[in-house]
Length: 433
Image (spheres, rainbow, N blue to C red):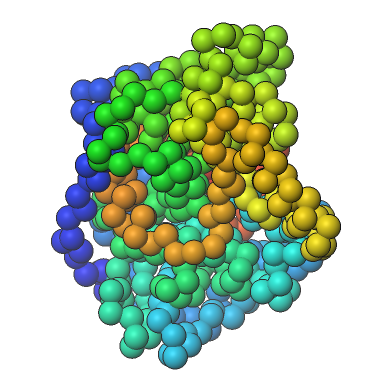
């Protein structure tokens, strides 16, 4: 067994989001106290994998979770130890990655449940599904020059528009089609696997759609995050404060997650289950046309109808992270009438909204540059933090991962069920040993 070659590349933090000093981060004592109160169970310490090695010999078959049919999760997902390891196409720029950890996203659950069959035209059942990954490069084609065998890498596949899922021991990554970057050695695989679809969506929703750059980052902004407790929302909450610590950030979440969202930088939380509190917030005169950015990670008509009036005229942006597939792909088939209704809805909202309305779609395109140059440096420099260790002073940088959210690959269906409840905090990770 060979040790991976040392990667001496220094990841420099993006100056756009380096405003908070180490003294202003959550203290270890605060983190531990908060974790114990919120998660109320022991949290495992995740090693940094300094001595981790990759498999020099590539097996013929691998373990993984296959989608064998659409529908009930207990029947649609099947664990197998005899899945053929995907083979490189030497006409393309591909790397074969031995997966050590993989993230589970709502899109995975929607695909398995058969809710977006229109988007799964590239899938031929049975197939391995999943998008986010972190692991080692174990093989590559001659066309690949930016990665070497043994490199630590992480990223996200363009799932479901690819047949190479990540919920297995190996995944085939086309570096021109997928989002992939070298993983800094100090970032655990579990953490890196969580920095996929969710953090890219948060970055695009807050920074890109908010038109934030070095020239205007010092401007104080007011931001609403709907669904602040989810994977995207947790990242968006932190990024909103990292841009400028004086920003006002309103987290709309359940009451049970209020304290943890406050500890991650929320100025105030609004309990969406408390109708009186929510209506009072919406109707308050000081909130009318007061917000620069509304990031909606839920996508319901009710939130848009009530919150859109709070957006600033002209310069404000209402961004929904619930992509286009949710609107006309969720009924199992495509129809021109559904597509027309979608376009009319977007057009109507764009015309009637005080500011700008946008629907974020993170399933298409290559976001490797954002991951490499913008996101991984701030994770490496501990700008995105989460209290997930117990009995130690070490801080692991990640979205929230409690020990009941780190699940062995064999029990992936349990992870899918957790996502299906819509009541998870942060990310759920599959580990592949």
